[in-house]
Image (cartoon, rainbow, N blue to C red; front, side, top):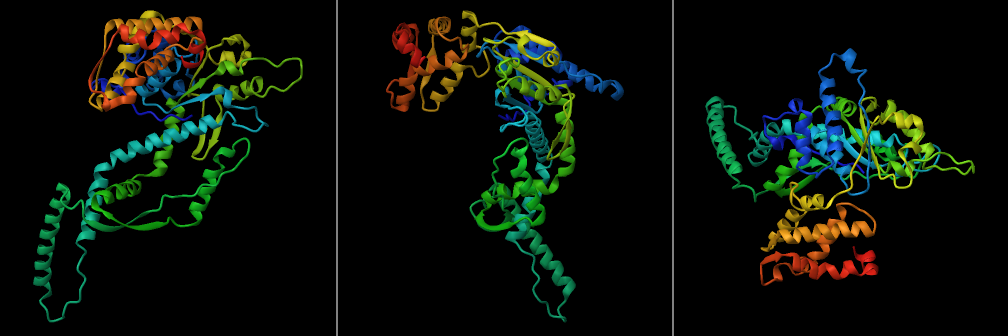
Length: 470
């Protein structure tokens, strides 16, 4: 599952640059979103800082400094994925989260492990392209402005009599044309012409895709076929008669594409993938295990591990943009390891994840903090959603404590799903308020401990009902 992430370090202010971030500051950034798990935060902070240090080394040393891949061990809902996701945002790095259980051994139908490198490269290209588009945005807007003015005021190529005074006529016409053009420019900038219809030519982006069913490497076949036919046939343009306000959006993408150099973007994206890419391998415990003596093929376990080994160790993968080296890509693997153990992984793969961090189960205090402390916490999200319909939602301290206690109790006596239990509880708690919405007469809703117990206590006490609802 590719995840595209923009950099988040800009939010902390212009004075704080990635190169200046110390591990302590990186942990402080992670603390804004993730409660507890200090050991895991310290491990990823050091890994990110070592990347920054590596970029400052001479090339002959830098090429031998490999990233120390991390293995996170902990139950679901304790923050494994969120730590890796937030780290990628801080670093503004290409990042994908993918489940190791989706891969199959080479020779079987399914996804091969190299597909994650191709997806990571796609994300890096998109990130680099968006950055390049942003750099040429002002130039593109100026060019669009001139093109719209050319449509509104076409050049006059009408026939002029030979005995007509051409010099003085052209001079007068040019002055009038320029004056009219500038007046139209002012109206265009102020938005007075937004409702006027004009006819423009834009690229037809409705490219048909051809789907293929196949094995290893076939996920790119549709893209490659499209590229091949794109080179054989010219780009199709379509004429549209639309409002000027809409025309600006259509023309902007075309103009930005004309102003950027795709070859340079591709080179920069490959370099970004190789030097700062992060891959989060979730559910690695699902492929932990050795071949049994029964002789039955197990395509999800040791075979996949052996296929992962060269990619994690460092190899070169062929992508549609060129060859990509995986030597300096940071791999963060995670798993609950309820049934299997990290030692069940093949020894070679264990050695490629030298840093192991065990994440702690969430305590009662952690649950309280998760509800209120992180930026855009769960309670803040529900308050913002209901505020769109004029409802002021307020949680008392005893309500937060009661919710946290209920989450701990349910996790203790049923499956421990960590902080995700709070999502279930809050959704059930606010079900009636969310359903009624702006139909509520009382727009100020106060959630206290009594309200929480009234809505949830019956379900929690009924064990059979709890298994299906919470």
